[in-house]
Length: 235
Ligand code: BV8
Ligand code: ZN
Image (cartoon, protein in one colour):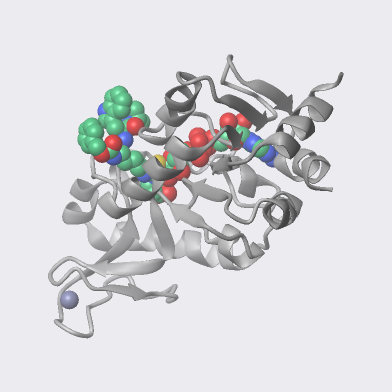
């Protein structure tokens, strides 16, 4: 039986499927991935931009990069992969979608039960009072907090920073409950997300991976793009 049919069967029989996505699900929307050919990290070094030290050293440069990414993403739309998740959630209304992405495309697609592991490009956080505000601006590289005048930073989890404990709690509840983990478009490099597949596989949960270059050897691998494969699982 071909892989897609197998995966479709597993999804139809699953009582608690769970999705985990990475930059690859946004690739067909025209949002560059991180480590791919024309990836974001290709022209930048993460440690120079996506770390608290980089922000302390030169906040304006870090804001310039995030503002550029924000303006890029706001001109893109969710693709068939994001939209297919809506149809799958019609059959599985409790299904969680844990994403490493900060581009907000899952929300814009209408996906429910979303957990953003690494924050969101369109929010900022005050380094002084920790207030979180929506921040859609593209051209202000040194935004200030309106309530306390403190410096605003991107509401993004940088390397070496802990994830929000509330987010981790939600993730753990989903990981404990799931009977099928579908992983879409991640190179499996960044922790803790990179550890989720083995966490659930250890208790016998099946893992499906959708990726043109699959990386999880114990998964049922569907080689291909999210936008072409996911609609076959949702129809
Ligand atoms: C933490 C910033 C506690 C936001 C990001 C040593 C060993 C293990 C772990 C560590 C270690 N040293 C430090 C750590 C922890 C560290 C880590 O994992 N480092 C890695 C690099 C080794 N993690 C952390 O620091 C995390 N915090 O663990 O706190 C702690 C603290 C200190 C020390 C220990 C523990 C914080 C992680 C968050 C980092 N922030 N980004 C931003 O600017 O965006 S991570 C960055 O990578 C993005 O957020 C992105 O989400 C994430 C993962 O990348 P992917 O989504 O996988 O994208 P990528 O380009 O890599 O791959 C794309 C995939 O798509 C490819 O496979 C490709 O084939 C596929 N694809 C392409 N086209 C398609 C497709 N798939 C489907 N369809 C297509 N069309
Ligand atoms: Zn403040």
